[in-house]
Length: 331
Image 1 (cartoon, one colour):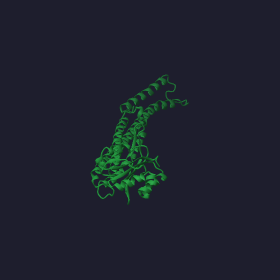
Image 2 (cartoon, helix red, strand yellow):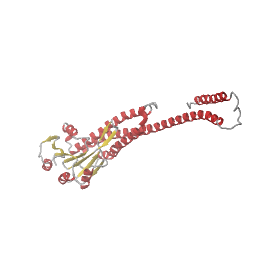
Image 3 (cartoon, helix red, strand yellow):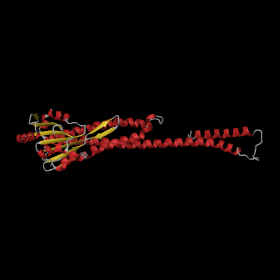
Image 4 (tube, one colour):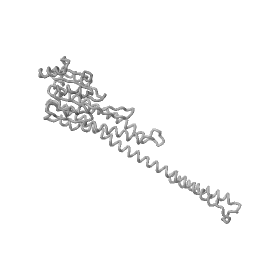
C-alpha cells in the first residue's frame, strides 16, 4: 500500500504537522483535534490497495468504482459522507500535436481529503507546496485542497490553449502558402488531426463548467462557505479556456474549408490545363489521322505542296488555340 501513497500529512491551523505514519491513526488524530484535516495522495491504486482507504474513510461504493476504473467525465458527485470531484488534467506535446488527458479524483469529507491520480501528468506535489506556503488558504480545511487542485488544472488548460493557438497560427500559414510548398502536401491530414486534439481538449474542459458553477454557489456539503469567491475565480478561468478552445475549433473548421476550396480551385486549374493541351494535341492528331488513311481518291493527296501545307495548317491551328487558352488563363 505504501507504494501508491504519494504523500500523507495532517494540517492544523493551516500548517503541516507531524502525525502517525499509519493513515488510519492520522485520520483519528485529525478528527480528535477538531480543526485539522488529513490529506492523502494516491497514484493509480489497485482495488485491493484502495479497499483499505475505502473502509477507513467511508467512501461510497459508486465513488470508489469511479476512482478505480477511471475514464470518467469531469463531474461533481455528492454522497452522504463525502463528495467526489473528477477532473481531467491535460498535457500537450507540440512536436506531435498531441493532447492527452489523464484523470484526477478528489474525495472531500469530514476532516479528510483523498486525491487519486491516474496517469503521469499533473502531479500534485507543486500544488501541495504552494498550499503549504499559504496558511491562510489552508485554514479553510479540505475545501482549500479542492480549490487549489481545481485551480491548477484549469490554469494549465489556459496554458495549453495558448500553445495550441501558436501551433494553429503556424498551420494557418501552411494552408495559405504557395501551392508548390512541400509542407502543404499533408495539410488536410494535419488539420483533421489537430481538430481531434482540440476535441480531446473540449471533452476535458467543457463538462467541468457545471461542477464549478455548483461549487461557486451555496448548499454544497463539505465545502467551506467562504470559498465561493475562489471557485467563482476558477469558473471564470475555465470559461476563458472554454472560449479559447471553441474559437480554435471554429478557426480550424474555417481553415479546413479554405484548404478544401483551394484544393478544388487547384484541381480545376489542372483540369483546364490538361484539357487545353489535349485540345491542341487533338487537332494535328485528327489531321494526321485523316491523311493517314489508305484511300486513293483524297483531295490534294498528289499535290506537290500537300505535306508542307498540312504542316503549316496544323501548326497554325495549334498556335491559335494556344493563344486563345493563354488569353483565358487556362495555360
